Amino acid sequence: MKTVIRAFFRTLRIVLGPFMLLKERLTQPTGVVREPVAQASVDQQCQSLALYQFSTCPFCIKVRQEMRRLSLPIEKRDAQHNSAHRDELLQGSGATKVPCLKITEANGQIRWLQDSGAIVAYLRERFAAPHDPAR
Image (cartoon, rainbow, N blue to C red; front, side, top):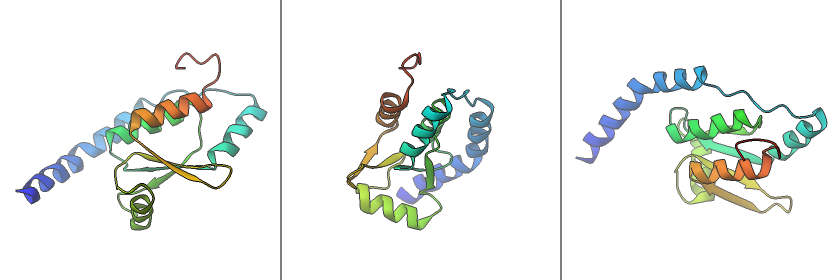
């Protein structure tokens, strides 16, 4: 029974995936515009972040849209098709659940933040401009 359910959802992803990606592309939010110095600081901070994701996961799409809205150049790592990324996600967070944000602190300590709502809240709190209405 488990194989039948997996096959059903795999087929569903194959059929709906292209439509989800098209919708994501057509509804891309406009990114916030920061002063060049402020954006350079944000770019530098984003180097310590990595998003483990699947391309057609609706929760991953939600996080990617927020990254676009906040103009965040966070590295995206495909945990679905790249076994090295999937293994790193499993080893670091204890699960292959996506989306998952890997946060490397200044002292080298690594935190793994799972759940799209928690990731979006973290990104807004850390990177939203003071006048940003989404804050």
